[in-house]
Image (cartoon, rainbow, N blue to C red; front, side):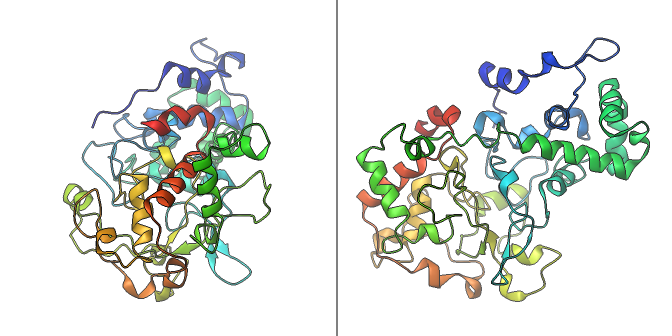
Length: 383
């Protein structure tokens, strides 16, 4: 699948601040004078991958809400490698709490689907030296690429002190911190969707969207908000639509992806149990609850990209509450939804709450989820 091209408007948005920055000594490029501006330059820099073909933006495309529309999983810098998980959106990722336990002792937060990166800066450190992602051999090789560029030489010295690029661990930490700073800007979390405008009294939802909103927040009908709600305050204006908890919802194996990436069929993705901080077998097969912000434009869905359509996701959840054989069929394949790879840890207590949903209610939930799309991506939700 060809890599999508950034629109002129989005490219202008990403680069709009650069002319205001001081220029490099050779006059060729502006020198970032804040961590956020430096992080922006790093985020889009393909020179930081082994073959100089891939940047952070390759898998977190700003034209698609900082997700990867190229397929079920992202291809690596070598053009051949492919992982076994779908790249999540980077929108609102900066609001994810550090990996740890909540007051009840349950694991929450962290970056990646299994939380193995405690913070956003930790997450930024991983793909650069991952052999199936950006493919650099080690941190020293990454810093050597930075030293090739006089703009980075000047920016890092100005922001972090002379000689910083001579200190590989220190420079690498500064670099990942700058990327995290950029990802913490309003560009990634504008809170300007139709839902946000509705909360501010600027617009009314349609009848279908309103039905979906009521269903979404109703424990009686769907139980969606048990995991996809951060605050129960009805007018909370920083809602990320996740409580950052970990669950096994029985997502089926993605056979198509594994036919592409060479992972043997039947291989169990242990999810949270793959996190080095976790050794409890009861966490096997659990994945962090994702934000639903921009969910309508960041498919494919689930940690392994097994579903293409948002409506299919809701139909899958509905299998836990319906007795209809017809409702057990995945419309994307024409066959039954596959079995849970790790059946012993599925969160049945949450999944089996509520009645089966008819088409009208399923469509209403889809309509409501589309209202969570940031304003600049609303045209994409109708694709």
